Length: 264
Ligand SMILES: Nc1ncnc2c1ncn2[C@@H]1O[C@H](COP(=O)(O)OP(=O)(O)O)[C@@H](O)[C@H]1O
Ligand SMILES: [Mg+2]
Image (cartoon, rainbow, N blue to C red; front, side):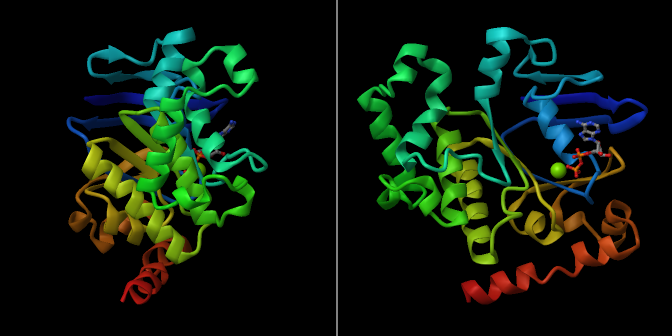
């Protein structure tokens, strides 16, 4: 399905991603972990073609994604929707319209200018919001919602594109533990129920362990771990985070204990 071969990104003399090779033969829920600067965001941005690789290849269902340009590249970008830490919604616009913006790439400029959305799209947007438990907020401005609700609106907007892949760059980094749990569960159910691949950059190991079937650890641009959560030993975590404070931070995170208390 998705095959990433020797993908590399250089910024001047710095190598942000160094020969990353990842094979995703069937829909999966993958967590990418690693300390700040490890190359996680750069890797996701290359998969989405927001950033051009220096070398290497991305292939999806036999199609070479690396060489796409123009309309083909935009089509790919809607097939692998991206979600960000800061939600990237239009704050003063209502929730349903924010979700409908997920269909912009297939609408004419004129229809877009006048906010003319087909009624079937509006119904679909409301159904998606309903599924994510936030349909009641559909008419509110996005800025009136909590962070966790806003992130679910961003997920709804992504789903509007009916993507094969959802790329989430630190989707819960700005959220409190309770909202973080709801957002991760939403992503998990999108993977399980729809068979979409979710690849999420996560800053704590606990979250990756809890929600993902596969964990990829990056350090200094390289993939230093790729396996099941139960294979992620303390030693492997130390390889990913190094043996200093950032290891302790990632490893002894209280996040999960808080989550367990909340859900108990
Ligand atoms: N646009 C850019 N220009 C120059 N260097 C960059 C750019 N984006 C990222 N980098 C560098 O690439 C490395 C990886 O960054 P990034 O992918 O953001 O890591 P992470 O998401 O794991 O924190 C870092 O050293 C960062 O400084
Ligand atoms: Mg990042």
